[in-house]
Every structure is written in structure tokens, then in C-alpha cells.
Length: 115
Length: 115
Image (tube, rainbow over all chains, first blue to last red; front, top):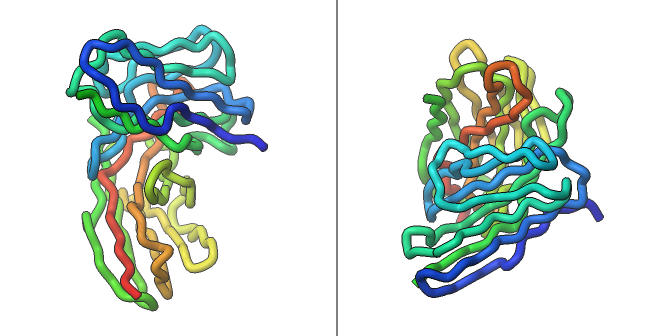
């Protein structure tokens, strides 16, 4: 079944740890995105990718980094987590092509808490 | 800077009521307006609107776009408790002729439907 997956769903870690949030999609989409969402607030784009080996920073500055070595996989890494990184991280993907332009499909999210 | 504003921020109704959610926007290079429903986790896609005056309908939900006045409404008739969620409006834009597919999200409207 075509879908978009994120792991872990919840993560509680201590300050200074390196973490990687996983995102995979089986829909064959070229474009993938990472959003950050604080409770009650709007989604902010932090990274996006047009395709393999393409990554760009989004509108909201983030200390995280991303990579896109395979079409289906778009992991996000924090080298040294801090309490200010506590948030929900949502991964999304979309097709290329006008008929489905901008329609993004979202994963279930990872709720990160840094103590 | 692209901006999407939703109103009201919060709405409490009883089952059977009809609600109207508003979304206004100020963006450069408008391509489409999307509505999402977000319950506990990931936003799920409801509608994408690209043309003014054409109503999109799905069951009890309907939406329409006014590109002249730069707003959209989402109507829900005969509300049910299962409609309780955050409703997100997002506007898709072009970035300098690329097919980036950027979405700018509003803050969302929290809808609570009581039995």
C-alpha cells in the first residue's frame, strides 16, 4: 500500500544527543518536505527536496540537516539536540506534475522532546 | 512575505450545526489553495482549489475560492463529533518559475463539535 512513514513516532532524549528522524514514502514521489509544528501553531517548512541529491532549506531556519540519497528516503538529523528543538516534525511528499501540483501527503509525525 | 490567515481560531458547536471556516491570503505567484484536516497527528488532504467560483464538494464538506478577494471558505453541514479537528488552510505558490510547490500554512481553526 502506497504511504508515507515516519519513525519514531515519539522520542524523548537528553540534551546533546545526536538523533535522526526517519521518513520514507512508497508513492514514488519526487518531492519531499520536512515541517516543524509547535502546539497550536502553523506548520513551518524547514527542508525540502526536489529529488535525489537535491536538498534546500525552507522558510524557518533550523539547525537540522537532511539528505536524499534515495527517492523514497528523506531522513532529518540533529547533531546535538537541545530543548529548543522540542516540537512535532512532519514529513510530506508530493508528485511532480500540474494536475497534482502542491498536493502534499503527510506522514504521522514524530513528536520530539529534548530534556 | 507570503501570509495565510484563518478565522476563527477556535469554534465550538453542537452536532447538526453548520459551520463556515475562513481563509484569506496574501502571496506572490499563487498556484492553489488547499484545505487539510488535522486530528491527532498528520494533516489529511481535503480539497485543492485552483479556480475561482468552482465549488468542490465531498459529502458534508464543501469549499470555494475567490481569487479576486483572495479568500476561501470551507463549509461543513450537519456537523458530527467526528468533525472535531484542526482545519488547516495552505496556499501553494510558484517560486520564480520553478516547480518547487511551496505551501504556506495558516494557523488553523480548531473545531470542537459537542454531542
